[in-house]
Amino acid sequence: MPKFVLSCCSTADMPAEFFEKNKIPYVCFHYQIDGREYEDDLGRSIPFAEFYQKIEKGAQPTTSQVNVEQYLSHFEPFLKEGKDVLHLTLSSGISGTYNSARVAQEMLQEKYPDRKILVSDSLSASSGYGLLVTAACEKRDQEMEIEEVFQWVEENKNHVHHWFFSSDLTSYFRGGRISAASAFFGTVLKICPVLHVNQEGKLIPRTKCRGKKRAMEEMLRQMELHAEGGLDYAGKCYLSQSACLEDAKTLAEMIEKKFPKLDGKVQIQNIGAVIGSHTGPGTVALFFFGDER
Image (tube, rainbow, N blue to C red; front, side, top):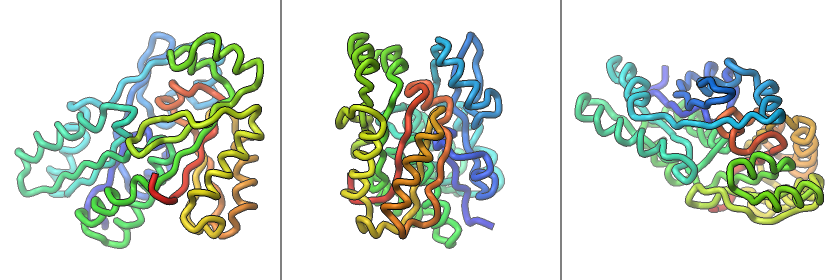
């Protein structure tokens, strides 16, 4: 049995089977679409394909982060059982959920002074967050102590690289992140912005590419530049995608050809409803371990 409970949020964008197999409980964000609220429950309430179809038809989902009360309900059962907890949150650069988790941590630490409750700001999102959780899980399974795993996460979270492009700019316009003119001309000219996550965990535009092929080539180039060991990178590589699986498969093939020493095949996940509410369909994101952001 693990020495402690490792947990995270649903926005790590990993399959339900991953969390079940690795005994990683997760706490759900929420989203609202078509006048109803749902848990971000990994596609169970609304299948991913249906969710993105709703957006394509004009739905404008909104999201809400995990609040203090939800964190209290998530953490306390483990503490009552006499277990310590290490929780990784979605990046504080895009969400306030880290602050909520810290408040809950402080409240419960007073109530359970003999238990350890550690909270780490992952500075990551989507399956980049999932990649960090995967690494922390491996450390846990090596029977490292909770403080050792926490310290490893703190020292290595800025080594998780996030690179992604979007071929559909509609959600960026609806969310107020780009102007109507930028969305229009970007669509007409088939502009695919390439973005990354910086050392503060914030989404930063890096360049604009004409077409998906060039955007994929740019992401592959960034992996060559930054992956641990360069072309000899031997770690895991994750992709996540929103209703554009074929694009993700194309990029996965490019990566596997360029990086023959990968730890297994490139894993492709779905971008969940919360992250997907902001990206919309047409986004492919690449995650790997590399130099410090």
